[in-house]
Every structure is written in structure tokens, then in C-alpha cells.
Length: 146
Figure 1 (cartoon, one colour):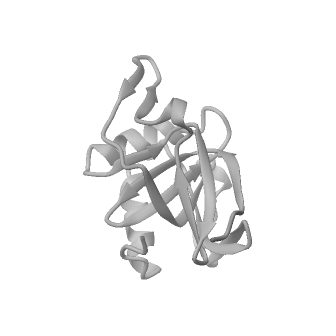
Figure 2 (cartoon, rainbow, N blue to C red):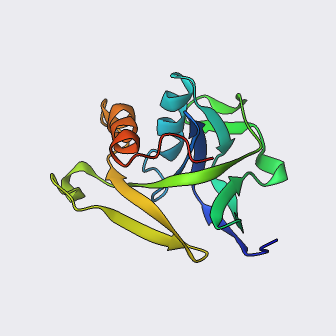
Figure 3 (cartoon, rainbow, N blue to C red):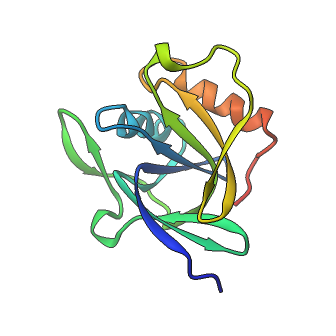
């Protein structure tokens, strides 16, 4: 078993068999976007901080024990939400302001603990953010890696 692991700042959700690692600066909309995904059937894996581990050539994410099942909803507080204990990370979603995102980007990826994972750039606060991410999952043929 591969023991490579690290802790990252980010939120992880599971939707349609895919694990999405949402990353961005504080206030970029990670928890807000996760909340919108929960409304369409996603499950939270980790909010604010995730532990990433490599197993069988894939990156898996889970919450630190003290954060398991908890989501911060700005203006409301920290709440309990539907969760799953871990998920294979199918895609990294980097949250950026709208004006920093290319209209027609090339495919991109990043290495996490030696494993290449697809990356997309999204503005979390656009009404279409959830739909754009779901289209990206389908266009990249991910359809449930883990």
C-alpha cells in the first residue's frame, strides 16, 4: 500500500461517482459551491481541509476527523450535512474570479502526490458553476472514476 499523503486547503464533494477537489483562496466560494452541489444530490467529503492519499495509482480524499460531516455556511454557521468518508479525486476545480478565466481554455492537469489529475478553472459565484463542472466531467469522460 502506498503511504504518500498530505493535507490541503480545499473542499471535497462526491457527485455521480466523481470526487471533486475545490480549491481557491479564502472567500473564493469553495463551501458555497459545495452547498449548491449538495442541493443536486452530491455528498460532502471534506470542507476547508482535506487529507489526500495515494492508493493503487489514484488520489483519495477524506476529512480530518474533527471536520467530518461539517460544512461552514457563511452567515449561518457550521452545520451537519450528508457525507461519505472518502472519494477518489477525479478532478480539481480551481476557483478564480471570472475575469481570470480563459473563455476557451486548453485541457489542463496537475500532479498530486505523483498522480496526474484533470483541472478546470471556474468562478464559483456564477449561477452556472455547477452546470459547467458537470459538463466538464462529461466532456472529459470521467463519469465516475471512484
